Figure 1: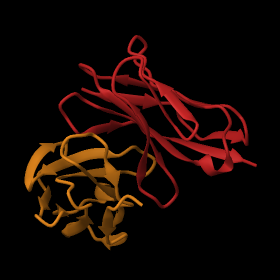
Figure 2: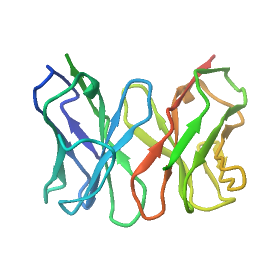
Figure 3: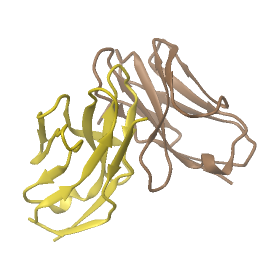
Figure 4: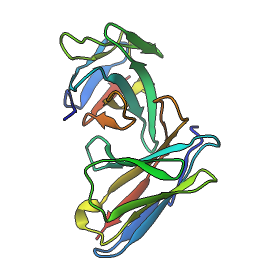
Length: 112
Length: 112
């Protein structure tokens, strides 16, 4: 039990739609990161938020955006969905000063 | 840029066999190195880590040694169990960044 919960667990969307994925972190974890894991691949870093500000971004286009809220919840938004966006999206939180990440179980997104 | 290469799977072993999963990396500076494990239907869990050259991380009978001269961080276990069946990911965190770069994962199947 990592204390990180994600919703929904599964989601089906069609190409061109928009989606919002949600994550609830452990209390006191000021950093939240999002990763995309395609089938059979390792997770790829999308971005990180620290105290509600974006604190680093991977090689993902601007249609991937995020929000972090003071209550330790966060969102990943993806606009104009493409077929290649089909993947498991993982949220991970951490305390301020160390690298240990606590991962949620992920949201499986299918884009048809 | 940073990259992690790990042996392709699946690796199929009998219970009590010796396990090695190879991992090599490319990075600037002095990254921290990690092994994560992903059980079916669950998120990633940190298995072990090492933060500097010659450090040995260990947990639950698994070990890995940070070898800077060979840029490697191979995972080993002396006697695997059926419950060790999972996907194992090698990862690195660059100095000053909290983003993890993952390998593509190695599926381990342990047969009774």
